[in-house]
Length: 102
Image (cartoon, rainbow, N blue to C red; front, top):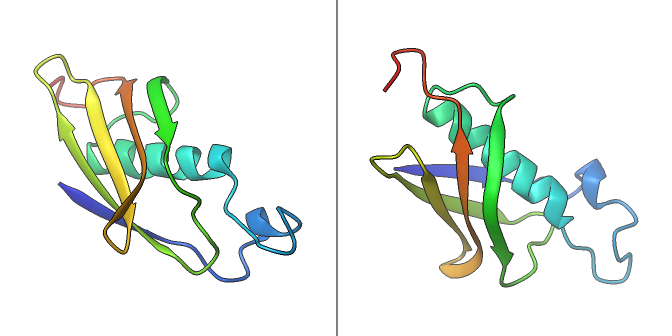
């Protein structure tokens, strides 16, 4: 499955974060990716465990982040994020099962 996160050029999370060459804070990016994935899977975002997260390249204001993810039999969500085809982040999260208990 795929989701898209568009980061506004003037997003407040980026203000003052390396003013000469602004980047999106990793904690904010991870939180937004988790929020989108939990919503896409119909899961409760309040009970999430980030088992792994790795940042490969900076994400900048104005970027579009393409998020690919898969769900394992154990309900673990593995994701990869890319900007213009270049991998910027990958990780593994666990969240509460969806309402159907799947």
